[in-house]
Length: 286
Image (cartoon, rainbow, N blue to C red; front, side, top):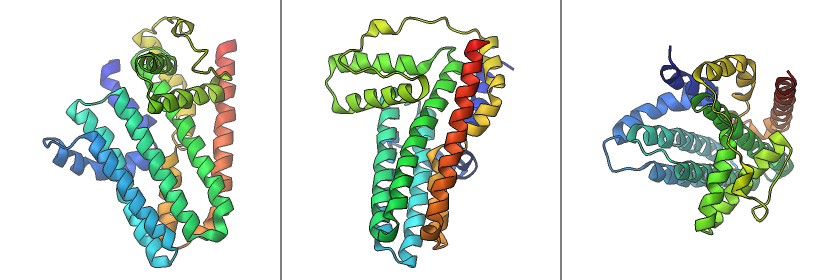
């Protein structure tokens, strides 16, 4: 089977199980309904963020009924978060800018939900602050791994470096605050995975020298060799944590589950990160 024929399956294999088996199946009828309409992916992203703010309001009330209502609304928001990406692909509207907007929408939703929970569960604010940090860290690291893996397989090069360079080139034409934030978001990923950080002032496009593009056979071999790492990383995205928050909210046990939820999610991420760096180090030394 050719690389192009396998890309759809590879994308699925890189998706979080919660997204692949729960949110995406629920999103497909909505994508089908919106495909031939003027509705844009960015509009769906905005609606998803608004629903998250509505869910945060119910969470802030703190009683059992409101927590269930908040959980249901938040799950609808997460389904719509899957709709925007699928709709963009269905309409041929995928773009780097759309990815940035989607990422900002995710962070707005996350902040709103966590603020709502802190208001509704005042005795658990410490645990929720830890959870907020873990959600941010898991989202940032999973996003890097997934996008870098896709660019390696699909194009045969390190997409993170090209993403930084393209963002820098856009910033040279437009002093957008959103692009600056995204530039440093990418730099923080570089710091975590590669151990270096570059400020916007000191960055130069000449720093990203062209690297050889891998042939198809090497790309597929790389994908096969990274199966254990892929299995670990796809359980480390933020959607698993959001799903558990929704599930525990609907059963009115969220507050009691927060301490061990934070501990397990932190241990899981640390183990994956150690394994990731171990494999990468061995890969470079071999």
